[in-house]
Image (cartoon, rainbow, N blue to C red):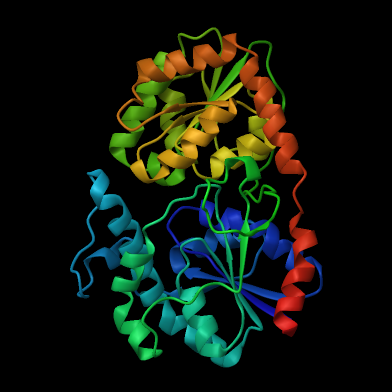
Length: 379
C-alpha cells in the first residue's frame, strides 16, 4: 500500500501531528511520502520521514498576496476575521500545492491520502484519483465555520473537478480525549496522541527535574519568531521569575540564544517536549499540539488563548480541572503569574492532569489504527 500524507501550515506542529501515524504505517511495511510546501520539508526530514516538496515557487506567507478571488489575506485582528482567515489561507495553500500533488501522483500514485486538519488538498486529490481520503486531526481543538471560506477560496479548483464543495473524508481520526470533545462535534475514530516531535541531543536538564518546582514557557517556534511575541515572551519570563520555581523556556535556538544572554539564570533551548514537559509542574503555552504533549505527560497547563474560535474547547479543558485558561485579552504577564501560582499551590490541578493522561493513554494507538487504513484502501 502506498500512503501519501499531506502536511499544511507553517508551524512544525503540522508535521509533528502526522508523524506518529506515518511512522506506524511505514513500520507496518507500507510505502509513505509526506508532501508539503518546501519550507516544511526540513522538519519532515528531521522527524525521520520522507519529504516531497509540492510547492516550491511560493511560501505559505507569500501566497497571501496572490491575485486570486477575494484578494489578499490579512491577519485576523478582530474575532470576526478569524474563521475567514483560517479558511482562506489554508484553502489557498491547497490551491497552490495541488499542481505539484497531481504531478507526484502521475509517477507515485497513492492508494490512500491522509491529511491533517486543514490540509484541504487531500480531499481534492483523493476525489480526482478515486482513492480514499482520511482526515487526521492535528490537535485536540474543535471549532466550526471554516468550511464555508475554504470552499469560497477553492471555488476555481472545485469547479475544475466538477465539485461545489470539498468532499467529506472517508475516515476521520480524532486525537482529542473523549471528555474534551464538544457536544455535536462530528464523530471520529479515536486515536491516541503519541508525541512525534523533532529530536536533539538530550541534555540532563531536559529530562531531569530540579530541586524546585519547574515551570516551562513556550510560545511555539512560529510565534516566537515574531518580534512582538519575543518581547512578550521576555516580559513573561521576567514576571514568572518572581515565582518560587525554576523557569525553563522551550524555544528555537535563535530565540534561545538571545534569551540566555538576557536571562542567564533561565534554561532555554530547543528540547523534545515529551521529555521536558514530564519534568514540569506547570507549562505556559498558546494552545494546540503543546496542550496534547502536556495532557499525555499529565502536566497542568496555563493556556494563553488569542482566538475566539478556540473558546469552546478551552472551556471544556478548564472544566476538566487540569488547566487555567487565560482568555483573549487576559494573557498579561501578571495574570499568567497568578495562574501559575494557583497551579503550584493547589495539587488538584496535578491530580486532574494525571486523570486526563490516563484517559488519553486508554485510546487506540496509531499502530491499532493501521488495520483500519488497510481495510479502507482495499475497499
